[in-house]
Each structure stands twice: as C-alpha cells, then as structure tokens.
Image (cartoon, rainbow, N blue to C red; front, side):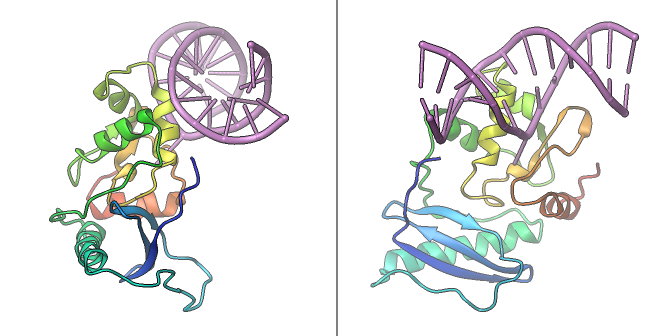
Length: 168
DNA sequence: CCCTAGCGGTGCT
DNA sequence: AGCACCGCTAGGG
C-alpha cells in the first residue's frame, strides 16, 4: 500500500487495550491494534486538533467499542480509503456491508464485487485493510468455514468472531 | 490429510 | 516488462 501519513494519531482506550486511530483531512484513515509490549507511549502527532477531528474521533471511539462488544455500531466517521487502489477500495466497501455475526468467504466477496476469479486478490486486499474491526475483515473466512488469515494476528480474528457467536 | 494447477492484484526490479 | 509473493479454491490422490 502506498505510504500516506495522517494528520493526527489519537489513542482509543478500550477494554482490549489502546488502539491508535489515524485521521487525515478527509476522515479516519487508519486503525492500529494495541501494541503488545508498549508502555503508555502514545503521542499525539498533530499540532492543532480541529473540532472536526475531535468529533470524528468520538464517533469512531463509540463505534469501535460497539464492534468490540459485538454490537451493531452506530454511525462511523468519514473513512478516508484513498490510500488504496480501486480494487482494494471495492473490497473494503464490500466488507462494510457484512453485518455483525455474519461471514463471507473470500470467494463470496470476490463475487460480490463482480470479480469472481479474483479470490486470492481479495485476500490480499483484506490484508491491506487500513481500518480493521470497523471495516470487518475478520468476517471473511476461507472456503469450508476455515479461518483463513489475519494480518492483525489470528488470535484477534478468533476473538472477534467468537464474540459475534461465529463458530469455526 | 497432502499436493497441484490455476487464479489475479500488488510491489519490487 | 518480468517476477515473486499471497489472508484462495477446486479437484485429485
């Protein structure tokens, strides 16, 4: 994925640890899982945090807490997916339509975006998802109900699925 | 279970 | 332009 630096990076405290949310001028552009072995080393990189970003951040925080608790999230802030290729954006937008508690296979996602044979590439796009959890790439499984992969670590994928009562 | 062939996007040379 | 990676899949031992 192309490098794209956010204008601000803000911590999100959750029962699962401190996520990092990245914002550009256009909206939320990244979400990072809590660092395993990091101390309280979050720094805010922005010089002046606008009221707009503050509002996006509170919206994003609420939504993240919802998904982590397997509740249907309310509104999301604007998402800035412009760092992705057209194909990746198509995949990410398709993922957004998978409801809490449901899953798609990589092949089904491929069909959903009209590229039935681009199955493997869908896997690649999922792995490049800049906003995991809110863009629920964890709800994409391999064929036959196998878990498939997860760039944030399979433990996270299993945890999120289990909370949504999705068995494997 | 394993192996193989086929598949398509992406990033690096 | 070429090539090696992949969060894949279906088919065949």
